Image (tube, rainbow, N blue to C red):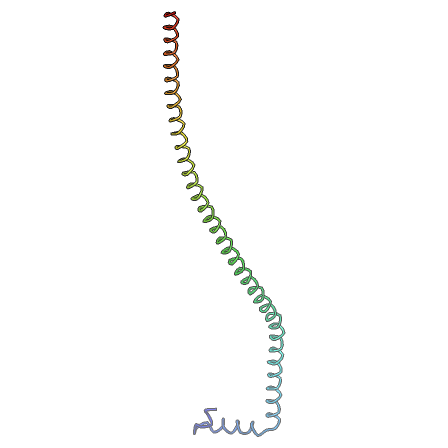
Amino acid sequence: ANFLRETSGGKRRYDFFLAACNADVVRDRLLSARDEYKGIATSLEKHEERGAPLADRVASTSKLVAEASRRDALERDVSAAEAELAWAEVRKVERAAGAGEAEVSRLKDKVGEATRREESAVEELGRLRALTEERTREREVRLQQLHAAQ
């Protein structure tokens, strides 16, 4: 309505005020505005009707995403717990292997000691056999001397 401030264009101002004062024009404009608002309201209702299922879908999708996130977090927790259990089992096996190696070393030492004792016993047995054979020869020689002296 800039033309109302202008000094020229009196006809336009007159037509504007005439239209503004005419009840039929005012009523037609009001009805036109009411129809336009009704159309906007109808359009808004349609958008709201379309929006409600979308909002429901968004809400259900959000719930699904939240549930999937919880499941994913649980799966990560389970995976971490399984990994920790596996590492605990590995450490347990490593400790057992270390203890087994120590036991094997101890048994090897015992076997070595037993082998040395056996070798010593075999040497002693050989020495005793040689001594026994020597004494047996000495007795045979004495017996032969006794038989020869008789």
